[in-house]
Length: 635
Image (spheres, rainbow, N blue to C red):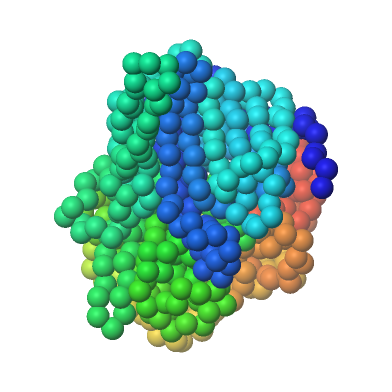
């Protein structure tokens, strides 16, 4: 096979932008580049271990896995070598020339130009290999895939617009990353400096990270330099240690290793289960969500090890999808080494582990909510919307999830993030209150200004505000809590504390409606726009409002469905008027039926706008308002 000539290729646009950010030193703590490169090397070894179970020829009997870190002061180079799975030419182009990760465009849209805040975003995004350009003026990668018969590849770049790639002979299995260091980064050619960084960030790596132990030189020119390599790290997988033997800083660094997150975790749980089923888990809650959190199709899950042998990166079977933000590992002695995704989906042991890990994560969150309210608020602000998905996805843990939910309310004042739990709500409800009241709206502001809240504000009854896109769907699953039904104040004939809950209340309400003279006058004006016209008991300050029937789709959900191109069946609301409002009283006195009809139509349109709806005929509304203003001005 003819050797391919050196090719010059351009970086993917996003990769080029990220490289420039790195080169311009966004990080004050540049030493983390070594952690990232060692983590990549460790991952490459883990993957080879797994692949060699089914294809032992990939290791050719060489299972002495290690990562070597060497330096040369004269040439100003630092080299990281692993004997892992290596890469083919195509894999080099894919992994080093592009960023194959969803959320890239959103990542760059959020960059502000402020180095500190942008550095946090990059940490949240995870950059791995690209961090090398923080210290290197040129990076050279030599790699050869463990697939028998593979050809070596050499990749070079100075982090500008392009990189070069060519075939390379006589390369052993694995990857060698050679950093040609910048002048200001020559501290990384010092033995003590490198050892301290490896111990600090990579002590938990499960394979030896080796450096030169000693150098013996002779006095004459023919004397040979002998170098002996020694492990700098403990080379013991952190999760196999006892919790008492692991320091917090070690847990934090291990999280950064498995997640490639530059930030520290919010919390973690290390647990070993023995008995009928044996496994170890180490679970982390991140501080910030990844950019692809809401892409439910992106691979997510825990790192799976079986008898300490790496099996896969994204074992999604061990946690439900609504907990997809959790990072960590699970290592089981009870699953077969040749485990596959199909086996995982059907294995009873996997189901048992999944159930236990789910309960452990929910327990972590529950403990945080009780003992560290501020930290839980921080978590809720970032991941609350994802937790809400669990109400419809995890029936067996629905009660536990419900206790984790947090809501703004009309008791929040103007502070959207001043939230309350369902337990907190019940703890301060009115004495004779049997229901939990809530309202769905597009935003906190629209919820707080809704006319449906007027009677509740007057009677000092708390109403929860729900304004996330998922909320209306969630509330179709959350119908009661602690034997208290959850009631949407925008629907039906709402019962207030102290009122009878008898079934015939609706009939009595209808009789009351028929008693008011305005009902008969308004009904023929609105015709088929509404299901019914009736006086309201929920309004104190507004003249009118629209009320949904119990089985109607809410405005929030309707807008989401329509935005996705789905046609929705029409539903007619109730039109409720406030008999005590001055406008309504004046309306009752209006003898001109044409003018009466115009005013009723205006009230109907205003009620639609007040609840966040849209006008059926904006032009007619404007014409009516113009005529009304002209009448007022001429009068």
